[in-house]
Image (cartoon, rainbow, N blue to C red; front, side, top):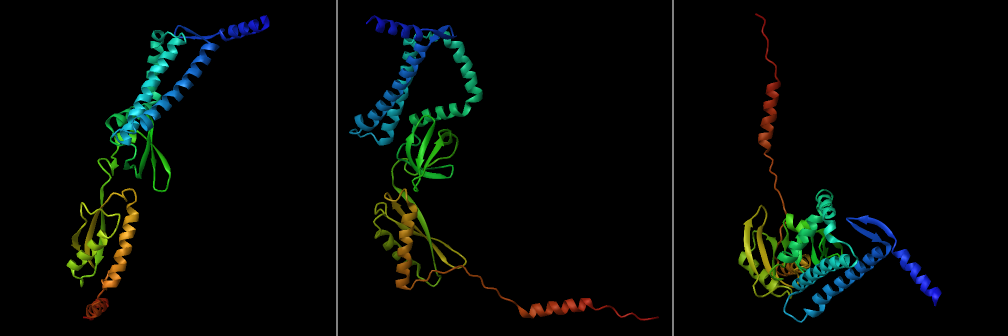
Amino acid sequence: MDSFSDLMKQIRDSLSIPLFELGGSTFTLWMLLYMIAGTAILVVAASWLGRLIARRLLVKSKIELGVRVAIGSIVKYMILTVGFVIILQTAGINLSSLTILLGALSVGIGFGLQNITNNFVSGIIILLERPVKVGDRIEVANITGDVVDISMRATTIVTNDNISIIVPNSQFISETVINWSHTDRDVRFNFPIGVSYKEDPEIIRRVLLEIALNNSGVLHDPKPDVLFLEFSDSAMIFNLRVWTREYTTRPGVLKSQLYYEVARRFRELGIEIPFPQRDVYIRQKEADAQKVGKGVEREEPVKHNG
């Protein structure tokens, strides 16, 4: 028993050996181990509590998913901030003595960590103002996909090819962002279609509307419509405008379905879809005259001896 007590006393004495001083506080091995363990537990607990709030506690409310995730993230970082201060105080660190050190760190942040700070502040703005939220279909920096996660540094976007792209939060603040589902998931797409000049525009309009209304992915309210855009060089151009909720994230699939049906119906009805063509006319008489003219210019004048 005495040997065990002596062993524990030696361990305590070893852990209490001063290692270094910083800001008027003496750091020991025990203090460092306590801070590392406490920080690890704090991070795990804060993350778990944030997910619990977003996925469990608020799931039965009428709050949409993006708002729930934002609330969970804000609570998580508030817990991390308060918890870390408590860990430092219980470890015996005098926070008032670290003022000079924090001031020096702020200068270092200003020079060396500008991008990280910018992304962090941008993440807070995104969570509060919510220009984008989890579940939105967005387009930024030539990237199109669904927002699946918003952290304090970056936002994760998953494309239609199931590729995750990590976008820094500052991109959403400093650049133009297209949000396809900011208010709701209803989006209108425009599909141009050209037909021959010999076709009746009213028949084309009626056929295109029938094709759109027979597609299960096209909304009937608002109704689809057809605009007569222009008389182009070799065709009359119509614009089929349809609203969809199902294919907001897959406009190419809806376009393919409609174009397949347009091609089939046009073949059945004998409606011609023209291809670009150019007619070249050569005026032979003018070409011959130009050749004759060039021949005359080559004739040298006759010289007379006087």
